[in-house]
Amino acid sequence: MVSIDAETAVTHVCCIGAGYVGGPTSAVMASKCPTVQFTVVDIDARRIAAWNSNKLPVYEPGLDEIVRSQRGENLRFSTDINEGIRTADIVMIAVNTPPVQCERGLGAAADLRRVEECALQIAKAAQRNTIVVEKSTVPCRTGELIADILGKHGSPGVKFSVLSNPEFLSEGTAVRDLLHPDRVIIGGLPGSENAQSALQSIYSQWIPSERIVTMGLWSAELTKLASNALLAQRVSSINSISAVCEAVGASVSEVAHGCGLDSRIGDKFLRASIGFGGSCFHKDIASLVWLSASLGLHDVAEYWDQVLKMNDSQMLRFVQRVVQGVDGGIAGVDIAILGFAYKGGTGDTRNTPAAFVCKQLLKRGANLSIFDPK
Image (cartoon, rainbow, N blue to C red):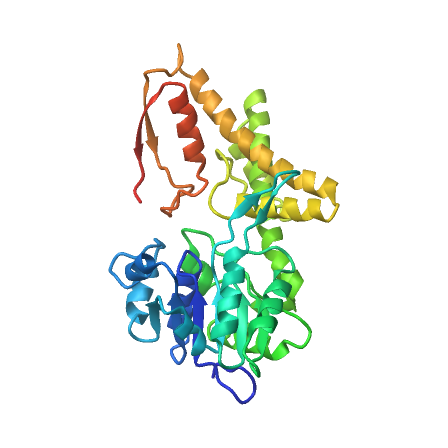
């Protein structure tokens, strides 16, 4: 049984946001919790229509089959947000939190307007005690903001618990990441143990208990930013080594292999590349930089900002190598670009290094033919 507490069963979960996180997460949960109804809601009618069609708005290996098997059973997609909230025991917030560049200083704050709008809508629509779960990547202590909005605008007698349950999905392997996660983090404030147990009862339908970790709300929020920052740091680290390798005639693949054999280091994220892209790494590091600077931790902010600078440097260095490799320059030269997504196995072009490279090549007069399978 999936339960809210010792006496009440979870029967309905609503996810606000039908994007890369909300759709796949709800679909996999529905496939593993057949007694629970999952409703994914969004203000974008075209996106909802796509989820209800044969051509999903998100490409992930294995996702089509899961959606088709659960849609019409215990998974539905709707634009009626208020109805989804009213019937839900648990409401997950999975909306975008894009970066907002600061006028001064380093980094970029996260735009929380959509999160605030969701919290206000939940407060006004909820008619019973509701668990509100942050799935969106948010700055530390955003849960406090959500709780404040819920407390001020909720109906009399309706109580809310706020949890942080950050996603750790990698595009291209999201379904596998959901089915076999390294860990599930559930953060809550003191006194929210019942709410944490309720969400844990969803995951425990298919995930071993030792992989479900409960912690404080602020710790859970920061774990997401720190995880992405550490992964991106490894990318920038091996890319910086690749520059040294080229200068001295060494092979970065061989160096990375040799380093990765050290069990303290491991071989994950040690593959030299043009640089990292996608919707998460750059945004989350920029948010960590902004958070550190706002707390007066300027050395920390500059440290993480250097990861972003190294990424920019790697992309520019790649362009320079292409230009230098063609006698007489690349003006008028026909160049084929094989792959435009930010990595293989996805159709996502957000912050793709290929866009930067293409713009630089076009600026230098090259003629481009771009192909991507997705």
